[in-house]
Image (cartoon, rainbow, N blue to C red):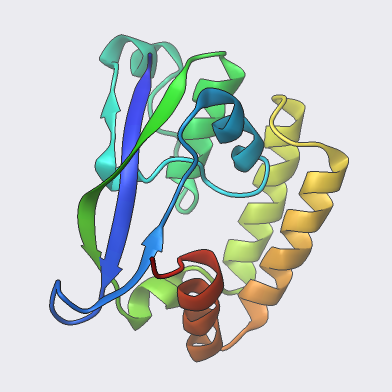
Length: 158
């Protein structure tokens, strides 16, 4: 096993004000399917096999999506990734987090990477189109609307 991750709760203000959870799939096949649309591992929760990490070249030089890219490269190298069902990290969120996940530069990098990842075997033409269309909406939404989208749809409460 190359990577073990877990679930994340997101809080605003105090750790008792949970605003959502970023749930990721648990087993390798589901993780690979999920990766065609979204990052399948919660980076703050991971334990990584160092030899496997070095074998795939470590982190890329991307300014955004570097974690997602790392998981795709592990998967395309046929390493096993798993997540456990427990929340391992309580993560503070604020408007800056939602702001970083939008904009034209982010969108351009996202679409470019989706095409690269498809050629690495993660995703299909269909998943690239669907996820890119979703990201277009996400990128052009104002920060407040993006925050609502993440909290109510993508990072649901329990």
